[in-house]
Every structure is written in C-alpha cells, then in structure tokens.
Image (cartoon, rainbow, N blue to C red; front, top):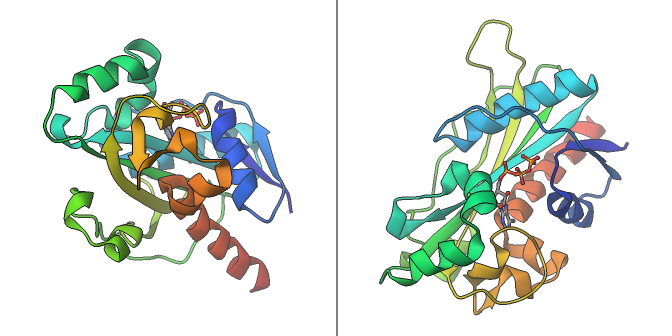
Length: 222
Ligand code: ITT
C-alpha cells in the first residue's frame, strides 16, 4: 500500500522512504499550522488538515530543535527561525552558552478518517538533559504513541508517534541532511555527517517512524 506523506520538505520524505517498507509518495502541500508549544497538538491539527486536503489516508511530521540554554527555543518555531535567522546564527547564539545541550523532537501523525483504539497519554521519559542519561537510557529516551481524539466536536482522531534524540549544538559540519543537521552533534558526528540510514537509526524522526512502521504492520495483519 502506498502511503502519502503530506509535507513541503523533501528531506523528511527521503528519511521516511529509507525507513518504511511501504512506498511513500510525497504530497507537496503546505498544511496550515496552529501556534502552540505542543508539537503533538500542531501535528494532530496538521494531519486533519492534510487528510481533508487529500481525502485519503495520510501522515505528516512536525519537528523542531529544542536548545536547553534557551529553554527549548526555537522548538515549535524551528521552521520560521531557520528561514529567518538561519542555522549559522543559531550556532553563534548558542556558542556563547556554557550549556550546549539540545534535542530534536518530532511527531509523526497519521489520519485516515477512522477510529483508533484509545491509548494512554504519552509519558515523556527524557529528563530534558540528555547528558544526564546513560547510553541505553538515551537510546530509549523517546516518548510513546497516542491517539488524539481532537479538541473540538467532530475533530477526526489522529494517531501520534513521538521521537526525541538528545545531542549538542556545535559549529556547522557536514553537507548531508537538511535544516539544523549541520549544528546538531550526536556521538561525535553531526547529523549532516551521517547518511539517511545512519541518521534514522538514532534520530527523532527515525524513532517516531519505527513506531509508526510497527503499528502499520500490526494494523495490516489484523
Ligand atoms: P512541513 O511542515 O511541510 O512538513 P517543514 O520543514 O516546515 O515542513 P516543520 O514545520 O516540522 O517542517 O518544521 C521543522 C523545522 O525544524 C524544519 O524546517 C527544519 O528546519 C527543522 N528540523 C526538523 N527536523 C529536522 C531534522 O531531522 N534535521 C534538521 N532540522 C530539522
């Protein structure tokens, strides 16, 4: 089954294609985004709008870079800050700080107009400071999955899959990936120094896609 990824970002599509067994087709549509501190709420809103646009099963992705010294900024505003301030200047701002800790956080949101089995609210097991966690804990430092029933009457339910990866902000290195990848270091390499497969193995999106892929598989066999 071909699944449709509604996004304007070809970098996200490359990573999803690398991960998912099913063929992934990009629907290049700029879905309206609500302003919120909650990536899950933004992703759920995006998924409903994308489903209404496509009128078939879709998934979307909402992600951001959360810098510890800036209390999580740019976070949900990452896209805007990327297009205005730019990666090099975000690095220069962070370089003045002693604490260079940061995390990428992302949510994959799926909507097909149907109902999903209710799941509990996700538990955020990342303590926000990845550096305080052991290697195994860091690898497991992901939030889980959730069904968002919707905030208003008649809102379509959306299935959410969360992923987070802790790292450090560093001087830009590497030419792969997209967005903030050149300034995000994980285990001595920036995401821009990894290929899509290596990045997916550890990234926020890879972790969210892994949960999404597992869920799609069980769904197709039941
Ligand atoms: P769509 O909303 O159309 O999917 P977008 O690029 O605007 O595409 P977001 O709204 O999720 O995506 O914005 C997230 C921004 O955060 C994105 O523009 C990148 O600058 C950054 N970002 C997200 N994931 C990233 C990753 O894996 N590597 C580097 N930067 C990333």
